[in-house]
Length: 487
Image (cartoon, rainbow, N blue to C red; front, top):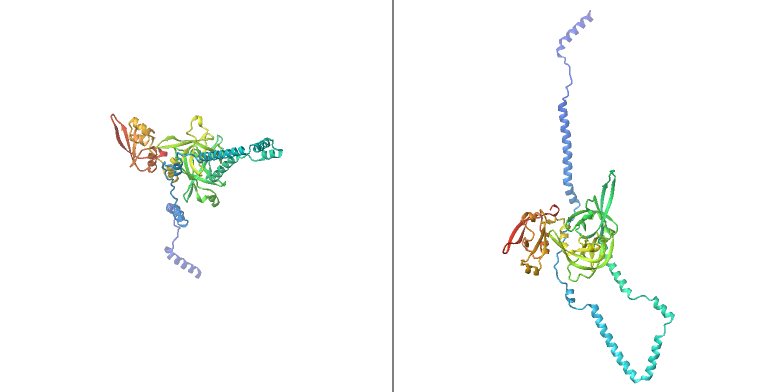
Protein backbone atom coordinates (compact mmCIF):
# COMPACT_ATOMS: atom_id res chain seq x y z
CA UNK A 1 0.00 0.00 0.00
CA UNK A 2 2.74 2.31 0.89
CA UNK A 3 4.45 1.72 -2.42
CA UNK A 4 1.31 2.50 -4.34
CA UNK A 5 0.79 5.57 -2.21
CA UNK A 6 4.27 6.81 -2.97
CA UNK A 7 3.88 6.25 -6.67
CA UNK A 8 0.72 8.29 -6.75
CA UNK A 9 2.37 11.11 -4.86
CA UNK A 10 5.29 11.16 -7.31
CA UNK A 11 2.93 11.15 -10.27
CA UNK A 12 1.03 14.08 -8.82
CA UNK A 13 4.26 15.97 -8.19
CA UNK A 14 5.41 15.36 -11.76
CA UNK A 15 2.14 16.60 -13.15
CA UNK A 16 2.47 19.77 -11.05
CA UNK A 17 5.80 20.72 -12.83
CA UNK A 18 4.76 19.58 -16.27
CA UNK A 19 4.35 23.21 -17.45
CA UNK A 20 8.06 23.88 -16.85
CA UNK A 21 9.33 21.36 -19.40
CA UNK A 22 10.46 22.60 -22.87
CA UNK A 23 11.69 21.05 -26.07
CA UNK A 24 14.85 22.55 -27.68
CA UNK A 25 14.85 22.70 -31.49
CA UNK A 26 17.81 23.50 -33.78
CA UNK A 27 17.78 26.91 -35.44
CA UNK A 28 17.16 26.62 -39.21
CA UNK A 29 20.03 27.60 -41.57
CA UNK A 30 19.51 30.80 -43.61
CA UNK A 31 20.86 29.70 -47.00
CA UNK A 32 20.53 33.11 -48.65
CA UNK A 33 22.47 34.83 -45.90
CA UNK A 34 25.16 32.14 -45.96
CA UNK A 35 25.51 32.44 -49.77
CA UNK A 36 25.73 36.22 -49.49
CA UNK A 37 28.51 36.02 -46.90
CA UNK A 38 30.38 33.45 -49.01
CA UNK A 39 30.20 35.69 -52.08
CA UNK A 40 31.35 38.73 -50.10
CA UNK A 41 34.29 36.80 -48.65
CA UNK A 42 35.36 35.47 -52.08
CA UNK A 43 34.99 38.94 -53.65
CA UNK A 44 37.10 40.51 -50.93
CA UNK A 45 39.77 37.82 -51.48
CA UNK A 46 39.80 38.46 -55.24
CA UNK A 47 39.91 42.24 -54.68
CA UNK A 48 42.74 41.86 -52.21
CA UNK A 49 44.66 39.72 -54.71
CA UNK A 50 44.12 42.26 -57.51
CA UNK A 51 45.24 45.12 -55.30
CA UNK A 52 48.32 43.14 -54.25
CA UNK A 53 49.21 42.40 -57.90
CA UNK A 54 48.63 46.00 -58.96
CA UNK A 55 50.73 47.30 -56.08
CA UNK A 56 53.52 44.90 -57.02
CA UNK A 57 53.40 45.92 -60.68
CA UNK A 58 53.51 49.62 -59.79
CA UNK A 59 56.12 49.41 -57.07
CA UNK A 60 58.38 46.75 -58.61
CA UNK A 61 60.09 49.12 -61.14
CA UNK A 62 60.52 51.76 -58.43
CA UNK A 63 61.99 49.31 -55.95
CA UNK A 64 64.10 47.69 -58.66
CA UNK A 65 65.52 51.07 -59.75
CA UNK A 66 66.10 51.98 -56.10
CA UNK A 67 67.89 48.74 -55.31
CA UNK A 68 69.63 48.37 -58.69
CA UNK A 69 69.86 51.87 -60.22
CA UNK A 70 70.53 52.12 -63.98
CA UNK A 71 72.31 54.92 -65.75
CA UNK A 72 70.24 57.15 -67.98
CA UNK A 73 70.96 56.63 -71.69
CA UNK A 74 73.13 59.29 -73.23
CA UNK A 75 71.80 61.43 -76.06
CA UNK A 76 73.42 60.32 -79.31
CA UNK A 77 74.51 63.13 -81.64
CA UNK A 78 76.17 63.18 -85.03
CA UNK A 79 77.09 66.84 -85.76
CA UNK A 80 76.16 68.28 -89.13
CA UNK A 81 78.96 69.23 -91.49
CA UNK A 82 79.68 72.20 -93.70
CA UNK A 83 81.12 71.86 -97.16
CA UNK A 84 84.54 73.26 -96.31
CA UNK A 85 87.92 72.57 -97.85
CA UNK A 86 90.46 70.83 -95.65
CA UNK A 87 93.90 72.46 -95.10
CA UNK A 88 95.63 69.67 -96.98
CA UNK A 89 93.30 70.20 -99.96
CA UNK A 90 94.17 73.92 -99.98
CA UNK A 91 97.89 73.17 -99.97
CA UNK A 92 97.68 70.66 -102.80
CA UNK A 93 95.20 72.59 -104.94
CA UNK A 94 96.82 73.77 -108.19
CA UNK A 95 100.14 72.05 -107.50
CA UNK A 96 101.67 68.87 -108.85
CA UNK A 97 101.46 65.70 -106.85
CA UNK A 98 104.40 64.29 -104.93
CA UNK A 99 104.90 61.53 -107.47
CA UNK A 100 105.06 64.00 -110.36
CA UNK A 101 107.47 66.26 -108.49
CA UNK A 102 109.63 63.29 -107.67
CA UNK A 103 109.73 62.23 -111.32
CA UNK A 104 110.70 65.73 -112.47
CA UNK A 105 113.49 65.95 -109.87
CA UNK A 106 114.74 62.49 -110.72
CA UNK A 107 114.77 63.24 -114.48
CA UNK A 108 116.68 66.51 -114.02
CA UNK A 109 119.31 64.87 -111.79
CA UNK A 110 119.78 62.02 -114.24
CA UNK A 111 120.22 64.42 -117.16
CA UNK A 112 122.82 66.42 -115.24
CA UNK A 113 124.77 63.27 -114.38
CA UNK A 114 124.66 62.12 -118.00
CA UNK A 115 126.01 65.48 -119.24
CA UNK A 116 128.86 65.42 -116.70
CA UNK A 117 129.78 61.85 -117.55
CA UNK A 118 129.75 62.60 -121.27
CA UNK A 119 132.08 65.56 -120.84
CA UNK A 120 134.54 63.52 -118.78
CA UNK A 121 134.53 60.66 -121.27
CA UNK A 122 135.17 63.05 -124.17
CA UNK A 123 138.13 64.61 -122.40
CA UNK A 124 139.65 61.25 -121.49
CA UNK A 125 139.25 59.82 -124.99
CA UNK A 126 140.92 62.82 -126.57
CA UNK A 127 143.98 62.46 -124.31
CA UNK A 128 144.42 58.70 -124.54
CA UNK A 129 142.77 57.83 -127.81
CA UNK A 130 144.65 54.66 -128.63
CA UNK A 131 144.75 53.00 -125.21
CA UNK A 132 141.22 53.94 -124.19
CA UNK A 133 139.76 52.84 -127.50
CA UNK A 134 141.23 49.35 -127.07
CA UNK A 135 140.04 49.19 -123.45
CA UNK A 136 136.54 50.32 -124.33
CA UNK A 137 136.36 47.77 -127.17
CA UNK A 138 137.43 44.97 -124.83
CA UNK A 139 134.87 46.05 -122.19
CA UNK A 140 132.06 46.17 -124.72
CA UNK A 141 132.89 42.69 -126.01
CA UNK A 142 132.94 41.29 -122.49
CA UNK A 143 129.57 42.86 -121.70
CA UNK A 144 128.04 41.43 -124.83
CA UNK A 145 129.12 37.87 -123.99
CA UNK A 146 126.27 35.63 -122.66
CA UNK A 147 126.06 35.15 -118.92
CA UNK A 148 126.93 31.84 -117.33
CA UNK A 149 124.24 29.35 -116.34
CA UNK A 150 124.84 30.12 -112.67
CA UNK A 151 124.10 33.80 -113.09
CA UNK A 152 121.07 33.04 -115.26
CA UNK A 153 119.64 30.79 -112.52
CA UNK A 154 120.07 33.55 -109.96
CA UNK A 155 118.11 35.96 -112.15
CA UNK A 156 115.23 33.50 -112.55
CA UNK A 157 114.84 32.83 -108.81
CA UNK A 158 115.04 36.49 -107.78
CA UNK A 159 111.66 38.03 -106.70
CA UNK A 160 109.92 40.26 -109.22
CA UNK A 161 110.23 43.75 -107.73
CA UNK A 162 107.20 45.41 -109.44
CA UNK A 163 104.75 43.07 -107.62
CA UNK A 164 105.96 43.95 -104.13
CA UNK A 165 104.20 47.37 -103.94
CA UNK A 166 101.03 45.73 -105.27
CA UNK A 167 101.13 43.11 -102.53
CA UNK A 168 101.95 45.72 -99.88
CA UNK A 169 98.96 47.80 -100.97
CA UNK A 170 96.53 44.93 -100.46
CA UNK A 171 98.09 44.07 -97.12
CA UNK A 172 97.42 47.62 -95.93
CA UNK A 173 93.85 47.45 -97.23
CA UNK A 174 93.34 44.21 -95.32
CA UNK A 175 94.52 45.91 -92.11
CA UNK A 176 91.87 48.59 -92.57
CA UNK A 177 89.23 45.91 -93.12
CA UNK A 178 90.22 44.00 -89.97
CA UNK A 179 89.87 47.17 -87.89
CA UNK A 180 86.43 48.03 -89.23
CA UNK A 181 85.22 44.40 -89.07
CA UNK A 182 84.87 44.64 -85.28
CA UNK A 183 82.13 47.25 -85.83
CA UNK A 184 80.12 45.03 -88.17
CA UNK A 185 77.30 42.69 -87.13
CA UNK A 186 75.00 40.25 -88.90
CA UNK A 187 71.30 40.93 -88.31
CA UNK A 188 69.01 37.90 -88.64
CA UNK A 189 65.23 38.15 -88.91
CA UNK A 190 63.40 34.99 -87.81
CA UNK A 191 60.02 34.33 -89.45
CA UNK A 192 57.54 31.58 -88.52
CA UNK A 193 55.39 30.47 -91.47
CA UNK A 194 52.45 28.05 -91.37
CA UNK A 195 51.73 25.83 -94.40
CA UNK A 196 48.43 24.34 -95.60
CA UNK A 197 48.74 21.42 -93.19
CA UNK A 198 49.22 23.76 -90.19
CA UNK A 199 52.90 22.90 -89.91
CA UNK A 200 55.17 25.66 -88.63
CA UNK A 201 58.27 26.37 -90.68
CA UNK A 202 60.97 28.80 -89.51
CA UNK A 203 62.83 30.86 -92.09
CA UNK A 204 65.64 33.36 -91.64
CA UNK A 205 66.80 36.42 -93.57
CA UNK A 206 70.08 38.21 -92.93
CA UNK A 207 71.39 41.70 -93.55
CA UNK A 208 74.47 43.63 -92.48
CA UNK A 209 74.55 46.16 -89.65
CA UNK A 210 77.11 48.55 -88.19
CA UNK A 211 77.52 49.59 -84.53
CA UNK A 212 77.09 53.38 -84.39
CA UNK A 213 76.78 54.20 -80.66
CA UNK A 214 76.75 53.00 -77.06
CA UNK A 215 74.43 55.11 -74.86
CA UNK A 216 75.39 53.30 -71.61
CA UNK A 217 72.16 51.29 -71.69
CA UNK A 218 72.01 49.93 -75.23
CA UNK A 219 74.27 49.14 -78.12
CA UNK A 220 72.82 50.88 -81.18
CA UNK A 221 73.11 49.28 -84.61
CA UNK A 222 72.25 50.82 -88.01
CA UNK A 223 70.68 48.34 -90.41
CA UNK A 224 68.17 47.91 -93.24
CA UNK A 225 64.48 47.95 -92.21
CA UNK A 226 62.85 46.05 -95.09
CA UNK A 227 64.83 42.90 -94.30
CA UNK A 228 63.26 42.84 -90.81
CA UNK A 229 59.60 43.25 -91.80
CA UNK A 230 57.18 40.76 -90.17
CA UNK A 231 59.99 39.18 -88.14
CA UNK A 232 58.94 37.34 -84.98
CA UNK A 233 62.36 37.98 -83.45
CA UNK A 234 65.62 39.71 -84.37
CA UNK A 235 69.06 38.32 -83.53
CA UNK A 236 72.38 40.13 -83.81
CA UNK A 237 75.65 38.23 -84.27
CA UNK A 238 78.80 40.11 -83.25
CA UNK A 239 82.33 39.75 -84.59
CA UNK A 240 83.20 37.09 -81.98
CA UNK A 241 80.19 34.93 -82.94
CA UNK A 242 78.13 35.75 -79.83
CA UNK A 243 74.42 36.40 -80.50
CA UNK A 244 71.93 38.63 -78.69
CA UNK A 245 68.28 39.65 -79.16
CA UNK A 246 67.56 43.10 -80.57
CA UNK A 247 64.51 45.33 -81.03
CA UNK A 248 63.82 48.13 -83.52
CA UNK A 249 64.25 51.46 -81.73
CA UNK A 250 63.11 53.63 -84.65
CA UNK A 251 63.16 53.54 -88.46
CA UNK A 252 62.82 55.77 -91.53
CA UNK A 253 60.63 54.77 -94.47
CA UNK A 254 62.38 56.98 -97.04
CA UNK A 255 65.87 55.56 -96.65
CA UNK A 256 64.81 52.11 -95.36
CA UNK A 257 67.17 52.57 -92.41
CA UNK A 258 66.48 51.37 -88.87
CA UNK A 259 68.36 51.66 -85.59
CA UNK A 260 68.31 48.46 -83.54
CA UNK A 261 68.91 48.37 -79.80
CA UNK A 262 70.62 45.55 -77.90
CA UNK A 263 70.39 45.83 -74.11
CA UNK A 264 73.84 45.87 -72.54
CA UNK A 265 72.59 43.51 -69.81
CA UNK A 266 72.49 40.71 -72.37
CA UNK A 267 75.99 41.28 -73.75
CA UNK A 268 78.95 39.67 -72.00
CA UNK A 269 81.93 41.82 -71.01
CA UNK A 270 84.23 39.85 -73.33
CA UNK A 271 82.00 40.69 -76.30
CA UNK A 272 81.80 44.36 -75.31
CA UNK A 273 85.58 44.55 -75.17
CA UNK A 274 85.96 42.96 -78.63
CA UNK A 275 83.46 45.15 -80.52
CA UNK A 276 84.06 48.78 -81.49
CA UNK A 277 81.83 51.70 -82.39
CA UNK A 278 82.28 52.84 -85.99
CA UNK A 279 83.30 56.43 -86.71
CA UNK A 280 81.07 58.36 -89.11
CA UNK A 281 83.21 60.37 -91.50
CA UNK A 282 82.41 62.85 -94.28
CA UNK A 283 81.12 62.34 -97.81
CA UNK A 284 81.28 65.95 -99.03
CA UNK A 285 85.04 66.33 -99.50
CA UNK A 286 85.91 67.85 -102.86
CA UNK A 287 88.50 65.23 -103.78
CA UNK A 288 86.60 62.13 -102.70
CA UNK A 289 85.90 60.95 -106.27
CA UNK A 290 88.69 58.65 -107.45
CA UNK A 291 89.82 57.71 -103.93
CA UNK A 292 90.04 54.07 -102.78
CA UNK A 293 87.29 52.64 -100.58
CA UNK A 294 86.44 49.35 -98.88
CA UNK A 295 82.95 47.84 -99.00
CA UNK A 296 82.09 45.67 -95.99
CA UNK A 297 78.88 43.78 -95.26
CA UNK A 298 76.51 41.47 -97.10
CA UNK A 299 77.49 42.21 -100.70
CA UNK A 300 76.55 39.02 -102.57
CA UNK A 301 73.94 37.47 -100.28
CA UNK A 302 76.67 36.14 -97.98
CA UNK A 303 77.63 37.67 -94.65
CA UNK A 304 81.09 39.03 -93.78
CA UNK A 305 82.16 39.87 -97.34
CA UNK A 306 84.63 42.59 -98.38
CA UNK A 307 85.59 44.24 -101.67
CA UNK A 308 88.15 46.91 -102.61
CA UNK A 309 87.58 49.60 -105.20
CA UNK A 310 87.30 53.33 -105.76
CA UNK A 311 84.59 55.99 -105.90
CA UNK A 312 83.66 56.78 -109.49
CA UNK A 313 81.17 59.61 -108.90
CA UNK A 314 79.45 61.55 -106.14
CA UNK A 315 76.72 64.17 -105.68
CA UNK A 316 74.14 62.17 -107.63
CA UNK A 317 70.92 63.60 -106.20
CA UNK A 318 68.23 61.31 -104.77
CA UNK A 319 65.07 63.26 -103.93
CA UNK A 320 62.64 61.88 -101.34
CA UNK A 321 59.77 63.29 -99.29
CA UNK A 322 61.13 66.09 -97.05
CA UNK A 323 64.71 65.03 -97.81
CA UNK A 324 67.44 64.97 -100.42
CA UNK A 325 70.48 62.72 -100.35
CA UNK A 326 73.66 62.33 -102.40
CA UNK A 327 74.46 58.97 -103.98
CA UNK A 328 78.03 57.79 -104.52
CA UNK A 329 78.89 55.17 -107.15
CA UNK A 330 81.88 52.81 -107.19
CA UNK A 331 83.54 50.34 -109.55
CA UNK A 332 82.84 47.46 -107.14
CA UNK A 333 80.73 44.61 -108.51
CA UNK A 334 78.05 43.38 -106.08
CA UNK A 335 74.66 41.70 -105.94
CA UNK A 336 71.41 43.47 -106.75
CA UNK A 337 70.44 43.89 -103.08
CA UNK A 338 73.64 44.37 -101.06
CA UNK A 339 73.86 45.85 -97.55
CA UNK A 340 76.72 47.26 -95.53
CA UNK A 341 78.98 50.30 -95.46
CA UNK A 342 81.68 52.11 -97.46
CA UNK A 343 84.86 52.91 -95.54
CA UNK A 344 87.69 55.24 -96.55
CA UNK A 345 91.37 54.87 -95.74
CA UNK A 346 90.90 56.79 -92.48
CA UNK A 347 88.76 53.89 -91.13
CA UNK A 348 85.67 56.12 -91.26
CA UNK A 349 82.22 55.30 -92.63
CA UNK A 350 81.45 57.56 -95.60
CA UNK A 351 78.38 55.83 -97.04
CA UNK A 352 75.57 53.35 -96.40
CA UNK A 353 75.30 50.82 -99.23
CA UNK A 354 72.03 51.12 -101.18
CA UNK A 355 71.58 49.87 -104.77
CA UNK A 356 67.85 50.64 -104.97
CA UNK A 357 68.52 53.92 -106.80
CA UNK A 358 70.80 52.46 -109.49
CA UNK A 359 70.03 52.70 -113.20
CA UNK A 360 69.10 49.54 -115.04
CA UNK A 361 72.49 49.31 -116.77
CA UNK A 362 74.44 49.69 -113.50
CA UNK A 363 72.31 47.63 -111.13
CA UNK A 364 75.26 45.43 -110.09
CA UNK A 365 77.71 48.27 -109.42
CA UNK A 366 77.87 49.16 -105.74
CA UNK A 367 76.34 52.50 -104.71
CA UNK A 368 76.01 54.18 -101.31
CA UNK A 369 74.10 57.09 -99.81
CA UNK A 370 76.52 59.71 -98.46
CA UNK A 371 76.84 59.69 -94.67
CA UNK A 372 76.95 63.49 -94.32
CA UNK A 373 73.30 64.00 -95.27
CA UNK A 374 72.25 61.01 -93.13
CA UNK A 375 73.75 62.19 -89.83
CA UNK A 376 70.73 64.26 -88.81
CA UNK A 377 68.40 61.35 -89.52
CA UNK A 378 70.61 58.85 -87.70
CA UNK A 379 70.65 61.15 -84.66
CA UNK A 380 66.83 61.11 -84.41
CA UNK A 381 66.65 57.36 -84.99
CA UNK A 382 69.30 56.70 -82.33
CA UNK A 383 67.32 58.63 -79.72
CA UNK A 384 64.01 56.99 -80.64
CA UNK A 385 62.44 60.22 -81.90
CA UNK A 386 59.59 60.25 -84.40
CA UNK A 387 60.45 61.33 -87.94
CA UNK A 388 58.30 64.39 -88.88
CA UNK A 389 56.48 64.20 -92.19
CA UNK A 390 55.15 67.12 -94.26
CA UNK A 391 55.25 65.60 -97.77
CA UNK A 392 57.30 68.12 -99.80
CA UNK A 393 59.83 67.21 -102.50
CA UNK A 394 62.36 70.02 -102.98
CA UNK A 395 65.15 70.72 -105.44
CA UNK A 396 67.95 73.28 -105.31
CA UNK A 397 67.78 76.27 -107.65
CA UNK A 398 71.11 77.21 -109.19
CA UNK A 399 72.03 80.87 -109.53
CA UNK A 400 72.00 80.61 -113.32
CA UNK A 401 68.54 79.02 -113.36
CA UNK A 402 67.28 81.64 -110.95
CA UNK A 403 68.51 84.45 -113.20
CA UNK A 404 67.13 82.88 -116.38
CA UNK A 405 63.70 82.12 -114.92
CA UNK A 406 63.53 85.13 -112.66
CA UNK A 407 63.14 82.94 -109.59
CA UNK A 408 63.98 84.40 -106.21
CA UNK A 409 66.41 82.55 -103.86
CA UNK A 410 64.96 79.44 -102.27
CA UNK A 411 64.25 75.84 -103.19
CA UNK A 412 61.82 74.65 -105.83
CA UNK A 413 58.95 72.38 -104.77
CA UNK A 414 58.94 69.74 -107.50
CA UNK A 415 56.23 67.51 -106.04
CA UNK A 416 53.89 66.98 -103.09
CA UNK A 417 52.53 63.73 -101.68
CA UNK A 418 48.81 63.17 -102.03
CA UNK A 419 46.85 63.85 -98.80
CA UNK A 420 50.03 64.99 -97.04
CA UNK A 421 49.94 67.80 -94.43
CA UNK A 422 51.47 70.17 -97.01
CA UNK A 423 48.80 69.42 -99.63
CA UNK A 424 45.94 69.61 -97.11
CA UNK A 425 47.10 73.07 -96.05
CA UNK A 426 47.31 74.36 -99.63
CA UNK A 427 50.99 74.22 -100.66
CA UNK A 428 51.29 73.52 -104.37
CA UNK A 429 53.78 72.05 -106.78
CA UNK A 430 55.82 74.87 -108.32
CA UNK A 431 55.94 77.03 -105.18
CA UNK A 432 59.31 78.40 -104.06
CA UNK A 433 60.11 77.50 -100.43
CA UNK A 434 61.94 80.46 -98.87
CA UNK A 435 61.58 80.03 -95.10
CA UNK A 436 60.72 77.32 -92.58
CA UNK A 437 60.15 78.57 -89.06
CA UNK A 438 62.75 81.28 -88.51
CA UNK A 439 65.33 79.71 -90.85
CA UNK A 440 65.95 81.12 -94.32
CA UNK A 441 65.95 78.26 -96.86
CA UNK A 442 68.61 78.50 -99.57
CA UNK A 443 69.10 74.79 -100.28
CA UNK A 444 67.48 71.42 -99.76
CA UNK A 445 70.01 70.75 -96.98
CA UNK A 446 68.71 73.81 -95.08
CA UNK A 447 65.16 72.47 -95.26
CA UNK A 448 66.29 69.02 -94.06
CA UNK A 449 68.19 70.50 -91.10
CA UNK A 450 65.16 72.52 -90.02
CA UNK A 451 62.83 69.55 -90.26
CA UNK A 452 65.22 67.34 -88.27
CA UNK A 453 64.85 69.75 -85.31
CA UNK A 454 61.04 69.87 -85.49
CA UNK A 455 58.92 67.74 -83.16
CA UNK A 456 55.76 66.10 -84.38
CA UNK A 457 53.53 67.87 -81.84
CA UNK A 458 54.81 71.37 -82.82
CA UNK A 459 53.55 73.36 -85.81
CA UNK A 460 55.95 75.10 -88.19
CA UNK A 461 55.46 78.21 -90.31
CA UNK A 462 56.22 77.43 -93.97
CA UNK A 463 56.72 80.50 -96.18
CA UNK A 464 56.52 80.10 -99.97
CA UNK A 465 56.46 82.42 -102.96
CA UNK A 466 53.83 81.61 -105.59
CA UNK A 467 53.91 82.96 -109.11
CA UNK A 468 51.10 85.38 -109.89
CA UNK A 469 50.34 87.47 -112.96
CA UNK A 470 53.15 90.00 -112.61
CA UNK A 471 55.23 88.90 -109.61
CA UNK A 472 55.68 86.33 -106.86
CA UNK A 473 53.24 86.48 -103.97
CA UNK A 474 54.46 85.48 -100.50
CA UNK A 475 52.21 83.07 -98.63
CA UNK A 476 52.35 81.62 -95.09
CA UNK A 477 51.17 78.14 -94.10
CA UNK A 478 51.08 76.91 -90.50
CA UNK A 479 51.63 73.16 -90.80
CA UNK A 480 51.77 70.54 -88.06
CA UNK A 481 53.93 67.58 -89.12
CA UNK A 482 52.71 64.06 -88.47
CA UNK A 483 54.63 60.90 -87.72
CA UNK A 484 56.21 59.57 -90.87
CA UNK A 485 54.69 56.13 -90.32
CA UNK A 486 51.23 57.70 -90.11
CA UNK A 487 51.62 59.95 -93.15
